[in-house]
Length: 237
Image (cartoon, rainbow, N blue to C red; front, side, top):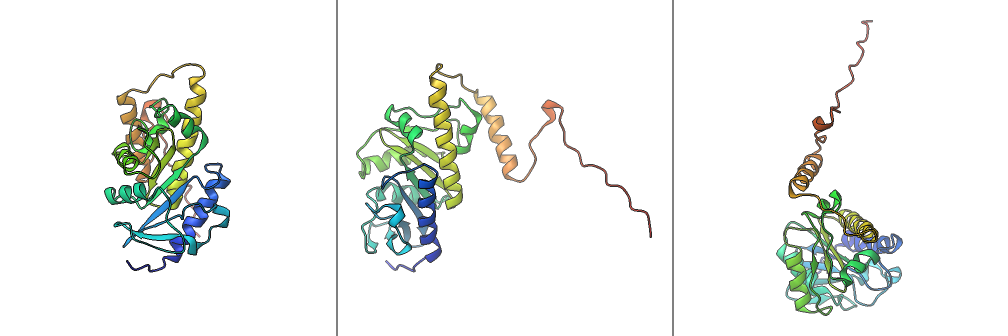
């Protein structure tokens, strides 16, 4: 394995990890983060607080589990490797023990389609994988399965995983899922909230797809169709 440095990605990992702590998504050394490189991945080191982490501390690792660096890779390297190996549509795997996502995870509950924003994770729900001990192949296998057709999942009695193409999108999705988890936990205090139907969620996915392509959402149903404002013609000089 050849480590070609990847200075920008190393700095991106450090910056994203520190932002996770600033956003309250993580604490201590509980989370981890990886980014795909041609030879495998860059991943956060084990047992090193983010506030002390430097770009040179990030570990380069290939998919055969060979690594280079002054530190050992995160104890969760297996699910980072296996997710990246299974999903060529993503580059980043972010794991955190954010509070409300973990509250649901310890009850082995996923997040259903109680709110339309659940669709940002790629499906009509956010699944919760069964429990397995941290760092094990069983945990990795469960995580890969729970992420099928999704960009986020909970890990039973553990925490949250999100996937994305960039650090920025991964951090955004982690915040969105944690917000959904917080809303769902509070909604449960009143009672199990009703679900949106498959038809309603299909409409949400279509709207998000359209907006993702840079198109405006379809507003015909509410009679609020935006139209360009005519511009006044300038008098000739």
